[in-house]
Length: 239
Image (tube, rainbow, N blue to C red; front, side, top):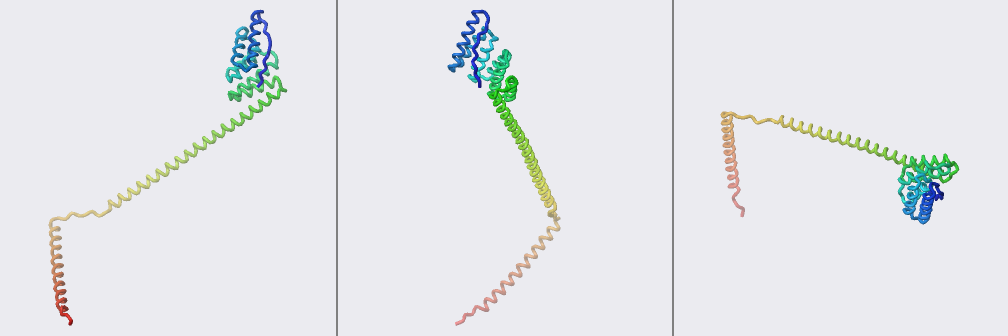
């Protein structure tokens, strides 16, 4: 960053010129003491007396830059570019304009300002270095933005495929369950249903059951008698 304090007297009326000179000198003194707010106040007073004072405008830009008010510094350096008469003065203003844009991360504007400075002063190696740095930073930023866009698109595609697969699985499971329910319902419908009996059929069934029970009981009684006879035969004890 170049902070060239330019000492010059703009000639207006003798009194205003003297006051303007005093304000500019005070501003330079405060600036060299790193009292940038006071320096800016003095430069502002000089500009109130003569808004076309290139030196007060340029130096105010330097003080404002040191106060990290980069947007205001940009404005001051742009004014200095318009007020400057020589190529060297314009080149210096463009150089610091580029630095202010860099601090605000406005890379395109910074690159253009450095290019303008080099057009006016092609041998300025510091400006050439700053331009190279800004171009490299812009390239890295563009690459990062491109990677972010690619990752975003890839994530969207992956999420879309995942949702589609999940929906397919859910639909398949639901269809299988529906088919299973339909199969179960079909089997249930095919089960034989009991037939209702009329009174005669019921009476006949009851008589048959009674006859069967009587025959079973008679056979059981006969078996009991046979068992008792066998027991009596074998009841004699041996001595």
